[in-house]
Image (cartoon, rainbow over all chains, first blue to last red; front, side, top):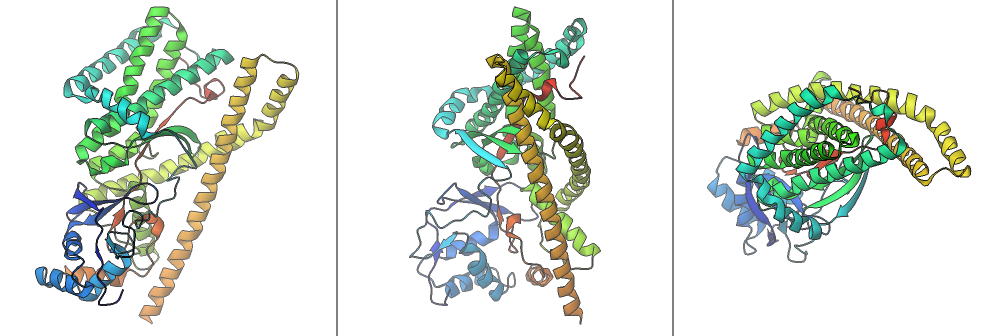
Length: 431
Length: 53
């Protein structure tokens, strides 16, 4: 960018306050792009610089104006680098020959953190449904839902289970398929809960899809629009899924009491177990976002990597790679989370070895052979479908485990290479 | 603040990793908020630790 160029603030830029636990006030900048919208958390003071780029001033004049308002705050050369290396490439500032609607580019992979990401229900369908259901996030509805959730659990585990022989291993193929169907319906309710909570706070553009995450097949809801909300409201969106899923649990309980069919009781328990899993903060499920929002740590997993790299760099005598800008409270929370996360990573590796390698992979050829023999022998359609779903699920788990191990290996190699180059650079400076 | 920024710039000897979505100017690209939920895959009948009461 030459001194006489006149970039200007992207006219499509939407700016709002951003609620986080950063050590300084932050602004949320949202930009359209060729794909999905791109969002940046930007130190709020930069926005004053950005607004100085009115298309009339040159870059030099806009920076002069900013320095005049904040003398001694930033070095001129540093501000030039901020403009050239960050604000312009991100599309926050644009040149006259650029398309403001397409200039922003996301650095995230298209699949985000999923190994497979398939949108299923678009905003055209999700948004109207979510708007109709948003009344369920009025305070009275939330309190009623929580009360019924507690009462139902006391009744099921305190009274109902005692009189029943509930053994998942006794289920036949047809029951398993029904359980899968009910579990999927419960998960769709869960995802609609996130969408309805987002709609309650005025967010739109929600998509629901299917994906593969580590070794887990999941449904997902893209509620990126809620980044603009205060943290407390974001946290309500995080628990919105469980709020709706617990209503589905009540339906299962009601159906069990009405019909006497145990499959609904199995569904209640199984969905309950998946609700417990969803609060695990080390998987990117509700617990992860809840932790992120309650402590105000955005991009929690990335911040965790930054924190670990900084720590490793100090241990190996290298310079600090990247600063995270978090407050002391958030850094302590991140440190505890990271330490426990390393233990959880160890647990995942044990699960991969124990379940995927020793059990699923070892039994895979026999299962395929069994299905093939069933198909040739004219097995009932339901049994064949169940067999195919079992093999399909196992194939996905094996694929997920392979990608996970490969990612960990690649990340480890990259970290060692970065530390090595940083150490060499530090040695070069001291020489 | 200038000192902090200058000191910060001197500390950065490793290039910012774009996959971390944060640059040396502390501008963070917010990750997509995908709220995940797991579901039964039919494994419930063959899991060695399938629950029973």
